[in-house]
Amino acid sequence: MIRWKIAASAAAIPALCLFGAVPAAHAHERKQTIMPENAEALAFQQAVGYSDAVIAGDTIYLSGVVAVPAEGEDSMTPAFTRAFEALGKTLARAGATWDDVTVFDTYHTDLAGQLDSFVEVKNRYIKAPFPAWTAVGVTSLYEPTALVEIKITARRGPN
Image (cartoon, rainbow, N blue to C red):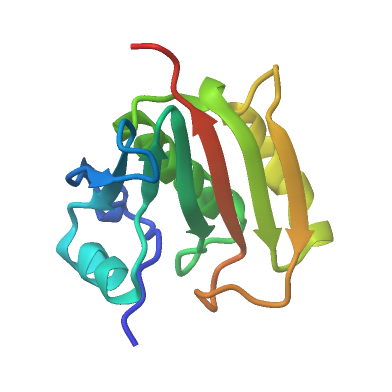
């Protein structure tokens, strides 16, 4: 099975690009997708059938990004930081920032054991006024070694 995960190396985090617009439900609106430039990540996402993000009107929907610890890491903080950095890059490609995030959903394999470290990293990126946040404990994620999956929705302001 091919899997893509956020690796320890910053160079391994996929650069992102906008793909062509696809007609949305309304003729005057367009849906755009953001896909990775990294060939391996792109092939995986095309095979499975999802985008890093979809922009519909002024709303940006980001797919979940997993936090995966790298071999030898003795804390969860680096994995959480890589996930937030990847999300921030996708937001930027979509024309938004962390200030534009309206909904922040997280799925934790050990909610109680991860929350303190997670909140410490989250607070570096997400500031008041805060988005709506739902944190859910789950038994597993698509990537078996992932600690958390983070999914966000944001709004683009006028250009």
